[in-house]
Length: 268
Image (cartoon, rainbow, N blue to C red; front, side, top):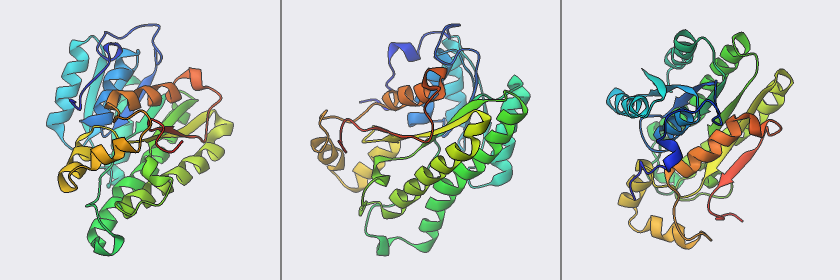
C-alpha cells in the first residue's frame, strides 16, 4: 500500500464548513507518512496549515499538493532537537497567518530494533531528544502562541500503542512514547483552565516509512503485527490523520488528557 494513501476527503479543496474551518494548524513531521497525510487532511478540512520537518524537499512537495487541491499551506524547516528551531517554527505560523489554533506534534525518530542492552548511548539520547524533548519544546511554544493569539485551542501529540505495554523490540522508543503520554496528561490538566485541550493519538501498525524500515530490518514484522490485529491489516496514514483531526476539532470540545488508540483493536 502506498504510504501516501488518502481518502477522497483529503484531496478535495478546503471547505468553509470543514472540520477545521477557520483554524490555523501547525504540523510537525509533515514531510511524509502520518504528518503529510494530516497536513493534506487538515487543509482539506478548512485549516491554513504550516508544515514543519527537517527535509525541505519533502515539505515543498506536500505544500504543492495542498495548494493544487485548493488548500492554504506553507512550510518551515525545523529540527525538533533544537529549541530555537522549534520556537521559530511555531512563531512562523503566527507570522504567516496571524494566529495559532491547533497543533499536531507528529515528528519522531525510530530506533534500531533489538534488546535494550544493544542500543548505544548515542542512539538512546537521539530517541529521547527528538521523541520527548521535541514535543515538550513544541507544546511550550504552542501554548504561548495560542495564548497570545487565538486564546483557546487544541494540541495533539503522536504516541504509539508500543507505549502501552512492554516493548522489548523497541524499548527506548516505547519508553519515550510512554513519557509523551504522561506529558500529554500533565499538559491537559495544566492548560485545561485556559481552554487549551491536549490529547494524544496512539497509532497501531501504520504503513509509514518508519514502519517499512522496521520491516526491512525485521522481515515479516508487519505481517506478524497484522496477525495480532482484529481488523487484520495495517492502517493507512490518513486513518491516523482522521483521528488527529477530530481531536483537534471543536467536535472533540470535551475531550482532553486522552491517549486515543487507533490500532485496529490490537490492544482491545
